[in-house]
Image 1 (tube, rainbow, N blue to C red):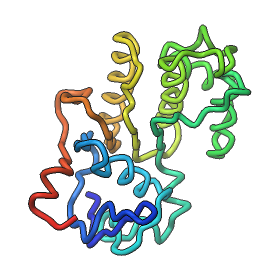
Image 2 (image 1 turned 180 degrees about the horizontal axis):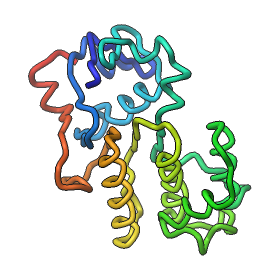
Image 3 (image 1 turned 45 degrees about the horizontal axis):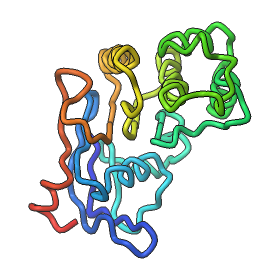
Length: 214
């Protein structure tokens, strides 16, 4: 369980959350819902350690996740809607660079298997500048495969289905289901009305605004 305690988050001069108290279940998929501008992406970036907290804390099992920030970040994968890819590198080179940053084994076989998991093996030598939005999204999602042989507890995904065709959508479903079976925790910010898997939790920011001052 992630416990948000009196959480204050600002974006510039704008107060996104003020004194937010809520719980997010772990070892399951949680769909973060809300209107545009409600703070879905900001909440994910905060949990990922990229947006600073102005007040309050986020605890897991009673421990502030940022008391050991480097250890927390090592055990999560965050993919935002910008995908974090370099146009000057190929699909495979982007994945290799990201794996090196994480400090994980850059075994060639694992790189290929990761690309195959999202149907990107045919495009591995394409430069990102040559890729459609759908291919870029899949190139970013290939990172998730590395969770299956490294210590990863959390996936934080911002609009992961954007630009995906049906076959790619099914490949992502397979990855999500596999990670949940491993007791992983997935937080997805999305406008989709339905989740990618059958059993999931909902964290509705708009409803929280009706019951809390946030």
